[in-house]
Amino acid sequence: EKYDLFEEGVVTPHLAPTGYLGTGQVGYFLSNMKSIHDAHIGDTFYIEGERGKITPFPGYEKPQCMVYAGFFPEMASNYEALEKAIQSVLLTDGSVSFQY
Image (cartoon, rainbow, N blue to C red):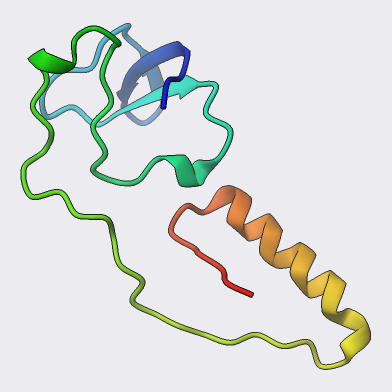
């Protein structure tokens, strides 16, 4: 996938824009990525045209689900409210996955 990069920087107690991220730095970037689920912890991002200069993190594997739970509304009429609440969590927490 391709994304436009608007800002990048390091994480101190606050977000500090630097225009670059160095090896070992804890950083962030702002882009036009539409879903939090398009990126995973450990993913390697690079500037288009520099792919050959970048070595992905060795041994990266997509995180596996470790906790499974079933949720059901107490009353069938509350199903839509439960679904809306779960969708809200999915928007902000990339570690949560959901299957119908």
